[in-house]
Amino acid sequence: MGSMVLVPVFDGNNYENWSLQMKTLFKIYDLWDVVETGTQQEPLQVPSPSYVYEGVSYDAASSAENYSILWKQWMEWKDVNALSLIQSGLSIEVFSWIAYATSSKEAWDLLMVRSVGGPIFQARKLVDLKKEYNNMTMSDAETIHEFTEKLLELVFRMKSCGWKVEDKVLVKKILSSLPPRFDKVLVEVAEKLSISVLIDCLLVHEYNMRPDQESFEESVIESINVEESFQGEAEILYSLNEITQCQVAMMERQSEVLSLVQQNQKMVMQIQKQMMMLMQQQDQMSVHSESNENQEEEMTKVIESMKKHNLRR
Image (cartoon, rainbow, N blue to C red; front, top):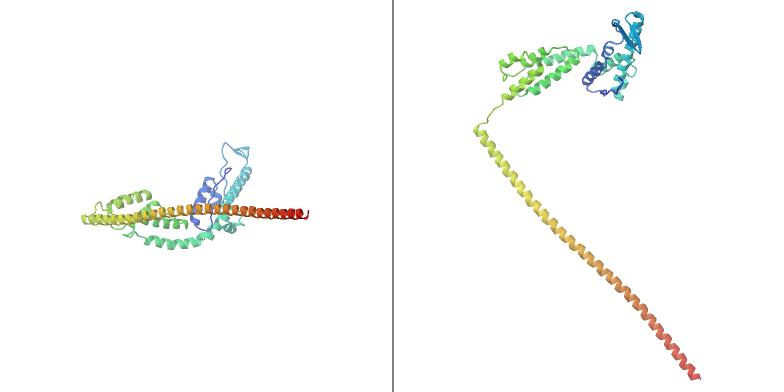
C-alpha cells in the first residue's frame, strides 16, 4: 500500500454501505482474512521451490520454525495495515468507539455491534425481516422499478444480518409477487433467468403493455385542451407585450425628463457664474469710485491750502 488509498468515511450512518466498501478494499490488499478471523490462523504450506521475504531468500528446506515466525510477522503486518485503514475511515466521533482496539478484528466487531448489533441481535432482527420479505407483493399501482427497488433494499438489509440466499430464490420471489397483468408464459420462461435479466425483461413487458393508441374522443379532448392552453398562453404573452411596451415608453419619457433637468442644471450653473462675475465687477468698480472720491477730496484740500497761502502773501 505504497500509494495513497482513498478510504470511505463512516460517520455513524449507513453502516451496511460503508462495511461493503471496506470489505472490497480489504480484499484488494489481501487483508480481509485478518479482519474476519484475526491473526491466529494456521500458516500456509511452505512455498516451493523458494520465496523471498524482506530481501532474504528462503527455500523449501527452511525449518518449520523459521517459516512459522515469518508467517506470524506477516499476519501482524497485515493486521496493522487493516487496523490503519479502519481508523482512517472513521469520523472523529465514531473513532472513539474503537480507540482502544488493538487489532483489526476487534475494531471491526466493535463497529458492527455499535451500528447494527452483534450476531444474536442480528439473528433476532432477521426473523422480522423474513416476515416482511414473505409478505411483500407487488400491487397493481406499483411499477416493476418501484417494487424491485423496494425488494432488493430489503434483501440487502437481510444479507447484512447474515442471510445467505441464492439468486434463483429471489427470482422465484419476484415472479410469485407479480400482479395478474403479467402473463404466465413470461413467468415460466423467466424462472431460468438471472435477477438483472429478469428485471430487464419485466420492464420490457411492462412497457409493451402500455396502450398504443388513444381513443378518438380522448384525442379530441386533448387537442381542445391543448388549443385552449395555447390561446391562454397567447393572451398572456400579448398582455405582457403591452406591459413591456408601456414600460419602455415610460422609461423613454423618464430619460427625456432627466435630460431636460440636466440641461436646466447646466443653465442655472452658467447663470450663477455670470452673476458671480458681475458681482466681482461691481465690487471692483465700487473700489475704484471710492478711490476717485478720495483723490478729488485730496485735490480740493491742496487747492484750498494753496489759495490760503497766496492770500497770506
